[in-house]
Length: 349
Ligand code: B12
Ligand code: SF4
Ligand code: SF4
Image (cartoon, rainbow, N blue to C red):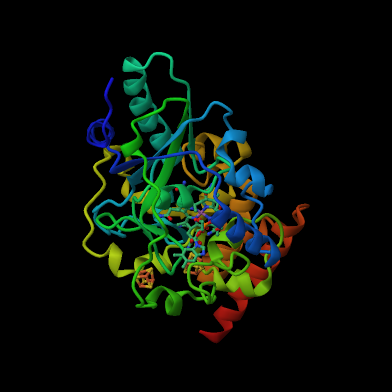
């Protein structure tokens, strides 16, 4: 079969993938330097592969790999911003957590593409990764020439903006030489709005987020939160979109062609008393299909307690009180902080 990028694109589009590209599985020394610097600055998170060699060498993941097919999906929808259904005690989510987990949707769409290729190439092997693989997803997308880096550290597609996710497949299929891209990193302009909007100054050095400050990271970490962080995260429950919401590249962008990314209106927030009263089994049943489900009930309940503290409504006290003697340190401590916070705010009223 004579493959071309146009043919690949057609197949991808019919699976609602907005962009696709092809690169060679080359080791990148440029990426090694970036990763080494991150290690030196102690900016490496627990949510990524720690061994640099495994992050830059695709052959360690699949010895027979000849090609990496890199793809983008948008999760941006133009749904209404009706908040009338919002409960009185609520916490907020980032867009990537509004509806069904993007890992699931993307994986199944990418699988459709790979099965279509396999129909013509029966000997081909492939493995799909969305977010959870050891390689550096934004590096792959940039090398494939699918967009550019923002000062907010996000990867931006010229038409769809940055509310996009990246997936890729490693395969032993060898394609025509002219299909392979090898683009240098491109960057956004100089506006800097994201940097001045970040509430915790995590974007002081452009293109190099300080994850130790980033609220998205802190909300995902287990254990106790520092008092400063309890306040700074307000009613956020999972993820932070501030540095993307302000970016001009996200203004007027089209909606995703993927209908599975549409969400029920109540997908944008969480009912905090309900979450606090859920058993583990109920939590898994309700949220297994959401992108925050993997973080588990314990982290989400801690985040619910601190969100209630920040809302400062007296009616929340009865829900918080159930956790004041909890055996889990971070839950008990956060509940005590939240109760104090509400009383303080009530006194000020
Ligand atoms: C760990 C992780 C996090 C951590 C740390 C983030 C980080 N930037 O490292 C935390 C929890 C903070 C996080 C937050 C978010 N994440 Co995250 N995360 C990851 C994960 C698992 C690993 C990231 C990683 O490897 N970092 C290592 C560094 C070296 O790579 P990088 O961050 O991509 O940085 C690149 C640039 O900094 C660039 N660079 C460095 N120096 C310079 C200098 C110049 C001049 C230029 C131009 C570029 C440049 O090179 C790096 C490599 O290409 C990836 C999935 C994956 N396996 O790659 C998802 C991923 C990066 N996350 C993703 C998402 C959606 C998010 C959030 C939007 C979620 C949310 N709403 O809260 C935020 C975005 C925060 C932000 N402003 O970046 C998407 C990004 C999509 C996009 N459009 O960019 C990814 C790619 C998952 C996916 N497959 O779609 N995430
Ligand atoms: S807000 Fe401005 S500086 Fe930040 S990523 Fe967008 S265009 Fe770049
Ligand atoms: S995700 Fe939020 S906290 Fe993190 S860099 Fe962007 S604005 Fe700052």
